[in-house]
Image (cartoon, rainbow, N blue to C red; front, side):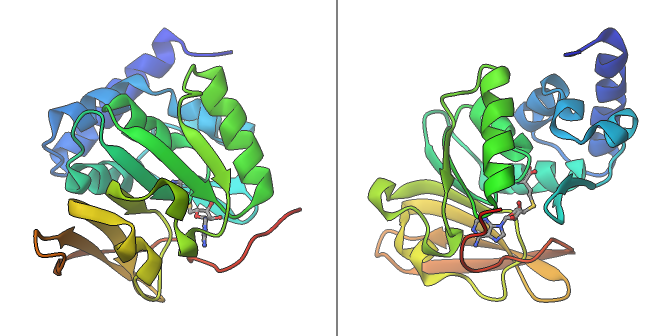
Length: 215
Ligand code: SAH
């Protein structure tokens, strides 16, 4: 089972819902209309894959709600060929969105089981150019820095200093910051190397954790 007309129809409806909720970036809507989200979920949730909801993906983690994926991607303002670092690969869905809008994607996950299954799914969809790493994202990915865009998809209690260090001049970092719930921060790195911070809406993400988990 890969993709079908039924799934495509459900995706069209989801895209309409995202539009109604305020997503304006046509490229984001277009790629989310193309990616088979149902393949990134555990079998039991396949039927609900095109509802605007988060779902469990194993290892006590969730695939973000489509609205959240669209919101973060829109904020990131990706331009073609930019180098993008994602922290929190999870199912791999968000990484697929970033790659299809034209980014060169590096994605980091701390849970080995998710790292393995996401990498497999992305390859199955022909997206093996997305580079997946089993790492603690708190440290970023120094050997590939600087990045034009950095996206964190887990709720962080603070902005990890390594991620600021690894942001290119003119780059943007989108990160949800907070413990119980999180405020979306958008941080830009200015010409003189300093940072300009903007605080946006409130969300609820799974927590950003330190260290690796191999099991
Ligand atoms: N972007 C994902 C959302 C996954 S939820 C998707 O599209 O499905 C957030 C993910 O962040 C979880 O898989 C969690 O294991 C991971 N995570 C949390 N802390 C991390 C860290 N320090 N380094 C790397 N990944 C982390």
